[in-house]
Structure formats: structure tokens, C-alpha cells
Image 1 (tube, one colour):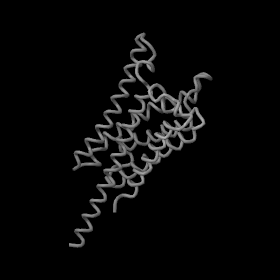
Image 2: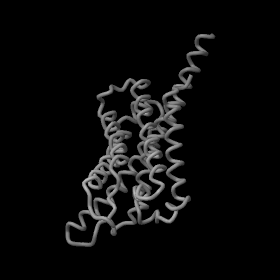
Image 3: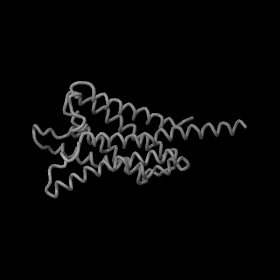
Length: 220
């Protein structure tokens, strides 16, 4: 039988992604530019509840994914990838608890926490997937390449943000105007979550195949 934990992770992650996509097409969040405005801008609207549910679903799916990794691939709970996965989940919870700064009202401590939690999340999840991909797919180079490739894409786009920050420190314009921030963030987020979704999908398939192999062996 496939890992029910991995299957639940897949379903929960997909549900969170779908809800986040829905925010792009229903009012009032449909009026927010997906190119220039970050996803967290949705939390400043009446659709905040839907944004929070989407983020919490992704957090739950993440917990289930790494739980499946620990259970089925023999990865220790204190393994670096699992610790990074925990940081990712903690960052998502912080993003829900502390809303993005509403610049119409001015800076806030909660908004600052939100920003740094986002940074931790965007870095920790891709690194976690890269670290654990070989343990999850020891004999699945295609799955391993997909998970790591998506993670590298997420980190590469985060690097573009760092370039903007460096330019700003050197006296050039604001870093958030150097790149289409909303679009870059969406690509980062989708790539990172897709990398983790690859882990869950691969685990569900792997455990199913292993279970079928055991059944055939016992029937022989």
C-alpha cells in the first residue's frame, strides 16, 4: 500500500496551491498585480482568510512530506534536511501570524517579522530538498533531478533578489524595483513547493511499488 502520509501530503499541497491560484482570479485580489505585488499583499484584503488557509494547507502538506521522508527513507528527525523543513514550516506559520507591512499605514514590527520569515522560508525549503533528494530517490535519477532542478530554480531567482539588494547598497535604486518582485516571488514559491511536491509524489509511488513487490514475492 502506498504511503498514506505521502498521499495526504500530495493532496494537501495541491489544495494549498489551487487556493493560492484562486486568489489571482477572484475579486478583490484579482486586481492585485501578480508582476509587481507579492503574494502576501493578498493578506491585506478581505480575502486574507483564503490566503491564510492556502498557506496553512501548504504548511500541513510540508509536515506530512517530511514525516513521510523520515518514516519511509530512514532519515533521522535531526537530519539537516528535516531541520530545514521545520524552519520552512515555521516560516509559513509566522507569515500567517504576522501580516505583511501595510505601507499606507507605515512600518510595523509584525511586518518586519513577516519579511524575515519569508527569507528563511525561501532559502530553507530548496536547500532541504536538495539535501534529501538522494536519500528519497537512491535509484530514481529522474525524480532526483526533477526535485533538485526545481530547488535550484527557486534559489536562482532568490539570487536575483540578492543582486538587487547589493545594487541598492551600492547606491542604485530600490531592490524591489530592480526586478518584477511579484513575478519573481511567485516563480520562487511555485518552484520550491513543486520540488517538495515531487518528493511526496515520488515517495507515494515508491512505497506503492515496494508494497506491490512484497505482495508478489509472498504470493510466489
